[in-house]
Amino acid sequence: MRKIWKWILPVLGAMVFTACEDPIDVDVKAGEPKLVIDAFVNNLDVSQRIRLTRSIPYFTKPGSEPPVSGATVVLIDTTDFTNPKLFLFADSGNGNYIWKPNPITGDTFTVGRTYALVVIEGGDTLIGFSKMNPTAKIDSLFVVNETGENAGFVPGKYVELAANDLPGTGNTYWIKTWYNDTFRNGIFDMNLAYDQAGSPNSSQDGGIFIWPIRYGAINDFSKPYSIGDKVRVEIHSITPETFYWLTLIRNENQNGGLFATPPSNIGTNMFSLNPAKKRGLAGFFCMSAVSRAVITVK
Image (cartoon, rainbow, N blue to C red; front, side, top):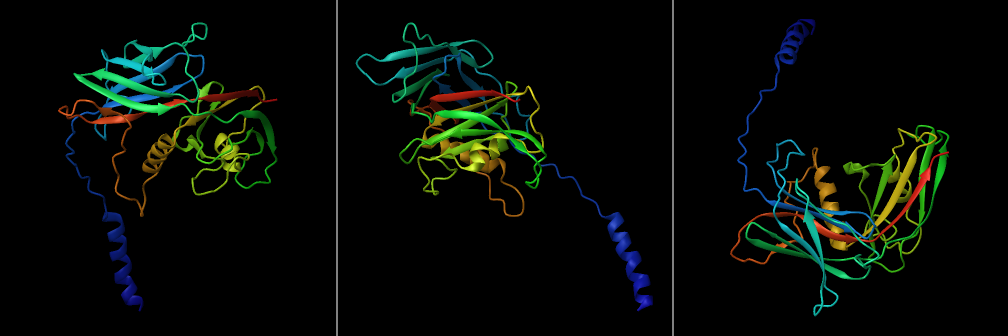
């Protein structure tokens, strides 16, 4: 037996130290760029932005998407087709189209109304529709002192949201958090709610949002807040279509490992009015009503 091991051990060692990974260069041909429409508009009294860019190949550095200028971007209140109200977004360069609300003149967006987004670009007219649904009211934000009894929680101060889902099933929300005016926009920070839970299958309606939504997703439990930190939370109403679209984005981003499924193209709710125009489209259009609250940690 000893003689056998004298031969086996050197062979195994040689296999370990000589094993290597050969790099493989994959020639991925870039497809035709798509027009990407980022149109998340809300009813806050701040400048609203719609952004137009061209898509980039998969392995290209994110953030290098070419901006699209020279387009016409307009929102239309479709409540009264005989006398529609138009909101023209001005081209401010770098792919950004801006519109500023004016409550004095009545140039604001109204909960319960349906809006059409029209984009004229490259000899094509694109259109999409979204209803501005009501949103849940924030009752308060309050500080929770974690003592370390919960496993994985660094002791310290965290913030919890007190808010109830609107009565009636089918309400969908995107709950956003800012830490000292910096938006927490990581994929794991995407806090989506369907009624008071995170899934349409929960059958929970009209009550306080469940713990993972009102507390878990608002905090990074490895980094407690310090005294003087400012935390802002906003509840944006979104359409059910937007909820599923954002869920697909989150799932695709986390799609990996042994049981990963083949990646799939994520659709859009914008479409072309020119049947002869063959072009790729991406992005989404959503109108949101917003409730917000701010707390300074003490």
